Amino acid sequence: MIKLTNPKSLSSIVEEASVNLSEALSILGGPDQRIPAAIQGDPNVLITSLSSASDAREGSLCFAVKRDFFNEAKNGGAAAIIVSPELFKELAPDENSLKALGPLNLVVFIEPRLLFSVVLGLVGRDFSPEWSTAQPFFKDRQSCEIADGVTFGPNVYVGAGVSIGRASKIGPGVFLDDRVTIGQDCIVHPGAVLRFGVKVGNRCQIHANSVIGEDGFGYNQIPCPEKGRLIHFKNPHLGAVIIEDDVEIGALTAIDRGLVADTIIGQGTKIDNLVQIGHNCHMGRDCVVVSQVGAAGHSQVGDRVFLLGQCGLNHGAKVGADAIISGQSGVLGQVPPGKVVWTGTPVKPQREEYTAQIMVKNDLPKWRKFLKLFLKGQSWEDIRRAMGDEGEKAKN
View 1 (cartoon, rainbow, N blue to C red):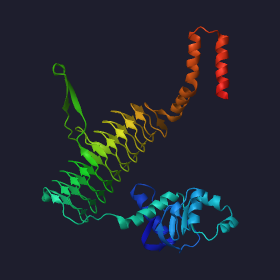
View 2 (cartoon, one colour; view 1 turned 90 degrees about the vertical axis):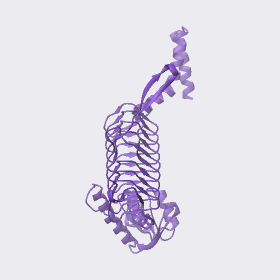
View 3 (tube, one colour; view 1 turned 90 degrees about the horizontal axis):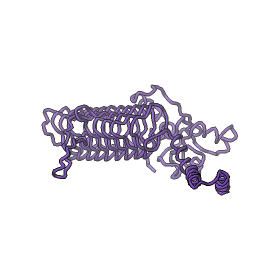
View 4 (cartoon, helix red, strand yellow; view 1 turned 60 degrees about the horizontal axis):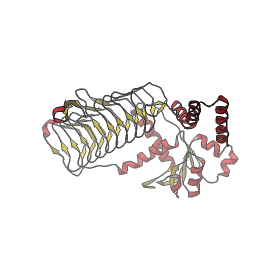
C-alpha cells in the first residue's frame, strides 16, 4: 500500500491521470486524444492511498480486472475501484444491479491497469530521485556540455566531451566515459557504466549497475598444436552503442559495443534485468526483452518483437517484426515477421511444436512397440492383437 502525501478527491486524481496519459501517449508517438474515464458514485470521495485489491482499505484506490479481485477490494472497504467496461457490465447489467452493489465508487476505464499505472506515476513523482548532493568529478569540464536542471549524485565520474541534456538525473557512482551523450529527461541509476561513445536518447532510463558499451566478445582462433594450445586473438571493438528515445534498460544488463559499426536499441524498447545483448546487434522499436535473454553478436530483431525469459538468439539470428519468442526457446536461424508465438529449440510455431511433443509422448512408444514386434517377425494378426490390447490399456 502506498500512502499519498497529499490526499485528493477521486475526480481530481482521475482528471489529472487522464490528462497525463494523453500527454504521455502523444510524446511516445501514440494518439493525441483523451481516453474517457467515467466515475460511478461519489467523485468527491477522498483517496488517501493506492493499494492492490487484496490490500484494499478505507480510503484506498485500486483496480480489478476480474470479479474475484473486485470482491476482494469491495470487502476490504476500498474508497474506489477501477474496472473495465466489460467487468462493469457484468457487475451491473441494469440499474437495479447497480443499486444492489451498495454505496460503491467505481471508475470505468477501457484498461484498468493502465489508468492505475498512470496514477502510480503521478504519485511516484514524490519518490523520484534528485541526487543533487555532490558535484561530479570532471576529467575535462571545458569539453563537456551539461544542460540546465541536470543533477548528480555523489561519486560520479564524467569523462571528456560528455553531453547531458536538460533535466536528466545521474545517480551515485555512475561512470560516464569519454564522448558519452545523454538526452533530455533521462535517469541513469546508481552504479551504471556508460563506456566511450555511447549515445542515449531522450526520456531513457538505465537502471542500477548496468554496463552499456563494454567491449564485444569476439576473438580469432589460431591453432597452435605444437604447444597444445588454441590461441584466442582478441578483436578490439571500437564501435558505439546507440540507445534511441524512450528506452528502458533494467539492472545488471550488459549491451556490448560494435566492432566498427554500432549496436542499436530502437525507440521505445523495454529491456529487463540480467539481459545480454552482443556486439553489432540491431534491436527494433517497441520490443520487450525479458530477463536472462541472450542475443549473440550480429543478431537482428524487428519492431514490436517479444523475447520472453531465457530465450536465446544465435550469432546472426534474425527475428521478424511482431514475432513472439517464448521462454527458453532458441533462435538458430530466421523467424519470419508476423504475430506468431514461436517455441522450442530450434524454434517452431507453437502449435507445431506442441503437436510434435504430444506425438513424441503419446504415439512414439506405440510405434516403438510396433517396430519391435515387426522385427521379431510376428504375424500381422499378432501385431494387431498386441497393439489393440495396448490401446485398451491406454483407454482405461
